[in-house]
Image 1 (cartoon, rainbow, N blue to C red):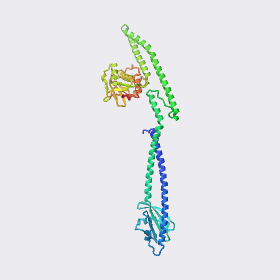
Image 2 (image 1 turned 90 degrees about the vertical axis):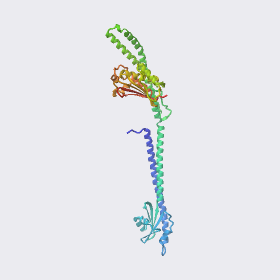
Image 3 (image 1 turned 60 degrees about the horizontal axis):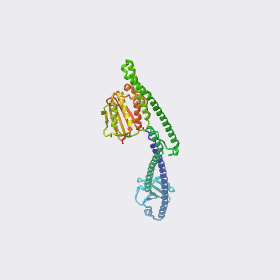
Image 4 (image 1 turned 30 degrees about the vertical axis):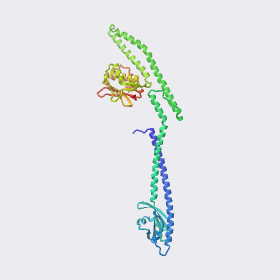
Length: 451
């Protein structure tokens, strides 16, 4: 299972925390309000029952009391229903057996014993409050108070508190998202700077004044980049200086080898063979020096400009005596890309030379652009590249097994490493896979690239 990102986790934590806090406050508020309203309602019902009981007692204190008329004289409104138990008989305003049967036996016994009491019960599926007041040894008075209105109030209160809890949770999530977005902004700046540095832009730095709490991080990061840039520049300068120093003796050796080659008919067979081997190694050494010089420059950012990439690919084919008919522009792909002309030209040259040297010759050069990335694919019909060698083949200074498995192994071993470096300068990458039908397919992805 994929782990959630930091921003998502913090946002969820804010939302859950806000939800728990608001839910707790809502429950406490609901319970306190509920107890307060119920307590107030019970006190009000008890006072009203005492008053009505006094009226009933006065009405019964006659020679021939009319019990029903006495009960009808009470001003109980629509929420209270009076019931009288006199000498074991039940009296009410109207015939309503549910009211009398709803009075619990325990409550009747307590009131009959001479103590007033109250109890919540269910009448016809609704909550009611029964208040009992003793009148005499043979008479007890009860009032059944409907709590329907109070229950509706509780429902509205619960709905309101739930809505508030949901809104607070949403606000917590929004606050968490805002806090993480602004809190992680320095890390975003670090990531942006790291991406620029990975692309070869060693001028990227962090501003220590943006956040005083991250001054140490910014300063340490900038010092690291300074040292890294200094070391890379030193290595690049060393490689370039060595390569340039080697050019002069190599030119002298090449001139001497050409003299020996021109006098080959005056040499015996062994001498001519040795002279040929020396000339081949000198040529290989010269290409190695040229590749080292190019590699020393490869860490610089790409110098993008509008280039006709189809024409550039055709020129690369002509330089190797290859037909330009193998160059294909994918449908709906513009011929003009915004790229570094020198780098892409070397990408094409090195891939085509690799295909000629190790792959039996290129079969296709396909140029594609999908709007966000430009893709160069070079297919060959050789033996392919073993899976275990496909990553190592692009590593810098690695000649390795991959080169030998593809052919004679007389390359410098830096050609494909340069392809990878030039692709990285365009924020891209290189891969190699099997070509349908046999052979290898080298794929170079360059980010951006449209004018």
